[in-house]
Image 1 (tube, rainbow over the protein chains, first blue to last red):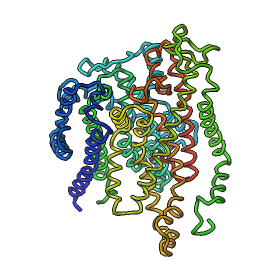
Image 2: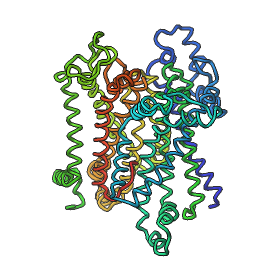
Image 3: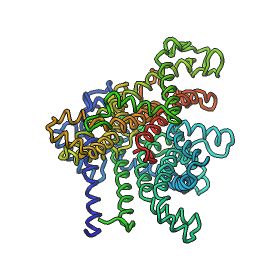
Length: 315
Length: 294
């Protein structure tokens, strides 16, 4: 089968997944017991307010008509207007994108740079104290809530040592120094669970290949140990590691919501929580759709990347 | 195994599994983690007897006190005793943890069975599970709570839904690999009805992986509840939960870190115990597996 068919097949496979997400998000509001307009406006809402909400979300139309018009808008990236500010939701998201994207990118690059070497090291020195330490760290990382780690680090680095600002965000346009000094704590906090996840998977994937014949051959022909580990073993262990980098995004997105709340970052996580507090349903809907789409898209790209670049994979 | 009809659920087999678990280092880890979980459960259940104060009683003369003999973990901004609140808070966390585990494992088991056994339904069900997994757990839970109101029941459902796909996938994988096993074929050829086939021959092989995943679901549910409460979108702040106590501690964390520290310590201990229990069970049931959770 030519490559292009394979790529198309993979892309098409995401359609039913996103379709389910869309239907779920759509029905969530409609199937909640009681009048959705009351659920949004609260019990004290006047008849006029309720009518406005029904009109804004076209709740007064038949369900199927509502769904079709809604999907048509979504496909054009029109998520409707915020019930609170009246601004288009896509505009609100665009305004809040930078802090979230910055923190996420710093977190992902930092996590991969720390976790992959750590995983390789622990697999290489399996059973040593550093291996045990790393395993203990990863179990701990899964067990301590993100916000607790956040407060411990704020107390230490921002309040006691005064090395870093307590909270807030500085855009990259204000210079690299302020940007990094604000971004570093939230990113470290977010990294803990991500590093735990990736390091654990790297260790496991390395252990699977490290006793293979080709690794012994590489050693026998005189490769240096780092070359054996990183060029020969790691490359063959890459698929599960890349996969977990992708699936771990779900954890990262959930973590972003908490981290932005603790560090008072004006990003998408804060937008979502504010929307939840105000029951601004179009914003909540859009956030679930957008984050799911990002998750599906990145996992698709990872999937395509290793099936296209790994010569062992045939379609 | 004594024969093809022997199932993992039968009493002697179950006993031998249990006794093989209780040996060596595994036995120590299992003993300690189970003891921690039971201790916290007992403390929470006996909260009315053990708590030195009413967890809701306001005392404006004793606000934001540090730890002392009088108030073991200090008091909060309304003068409420944090130790008493932590004891009572454990009840909600554990109810949510146990409830979400039972719900997620039960629902996931049914979905996985149907998906693995009836191939016609499989593609559709698995795409739905993929869709559920694509939605970030906290966002999904937050949206459900926002719409349906923040009762314990809603929070429970909101926490359970994102956990179901993983359980369903695991069950499906087990069923797919078991359904063509000789003993299942034999049972099917000899005319065993579907219900009995599932109950006697397929479900028993899911018990071990479900025990493992169940421990992870328990840990994750308690963590998510704390996160929701902490964000202010969980169970009503009138009810003491570990997340709510920490959420109220946010304002005062540099003055009285204990408001976050104490609940966090107990919470992390419980989650750590559940995670370690899951890891030990996983290593025991599948010695080849060195990988992380599914």
